[in-house]
Image 1 (cartoon, helix red, strand yellow):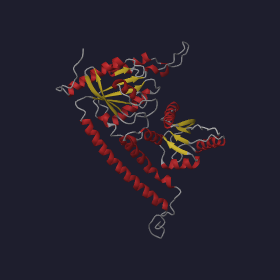
Image 2 (cartoon, helix red, strand yellow):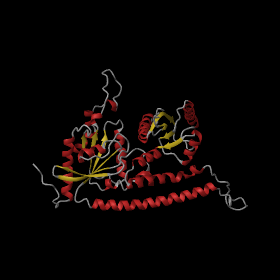
Image 3 (cartoon, one colour):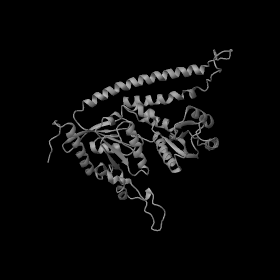
Length: 415
């Protein structure tokens, strides 16, 4: 009898490529590539190598210089000879159609940029009809200007100015152009259809929001993977999907929460990220309507992340783009159980860095000026959760009395 051989399914391997520029120093590029590796891991790829290049800006033809591209090509060739083939190369910035085509021709492997990787994760995470429609719209918008590279095997057959002297290109239109025009038309029609579908979904969601009664709406906003879903589960006693992956939550989830005698609505929204593609923001406007219509925003921050201050800036900029920056808000610094700092040696005279600052010292910085608009918790370990509930109750009740002064919707308070 033959033994069954179970072969292990291996994840695709990836190389990451980023640039060090005058606007993005080496440490910043490392942070961006760390995040890109986390994105790749979320999508199911294993990073085996990183390449960076110090330049003034991206090369318009090949993103990196010719020598660096040759270096990457040689590494891919060496891996193939060692029977460890590289499946893809992922670039930290959005590539143009021209750059993608040139790099593919040179490296002969799958080429992705940050945008296409995020789109891939969104497509994988989308569960509801709303999210799937929004993802497909963003994918089509991304694909439209890049159609030409899909038909390079059907090049145009002739050129010319098309005017006078018999030098024009009449009758010389190749099948590539015909196919390109056909695909462009199909995608444009699909985009129109998806937009119409999203308008219908948006109408349905608007009706649902109107039927929610006289309750204050609170929205959890923040960078991706900061613990919004864990906080939602903690407050609402629900089972919203949460894991240590980027964009674990893609669909907006709304739950009714009751603290003491006060009911209100809590919405968990899609996380933001650096270099978020404009098409994604546009496509997910109906999902982000929960943020627009919220009465209070709870800005969740992962204080254990080494670059949490920049993440705060990314979220604040996105909220400004959504015209939500003036809403009442509160910053919740989560994951204090995971905060680490390095104690300097007594004889170490080098300047103190942010890695040497304790949590107590952090609280005395600009955060101290936020008063009760700032709180430090651990949703996972339930640290300072009671204080969080008390402050949230106070803020929601204050708004509730202002917005619905005559309603009798408050539950009788049990002493």
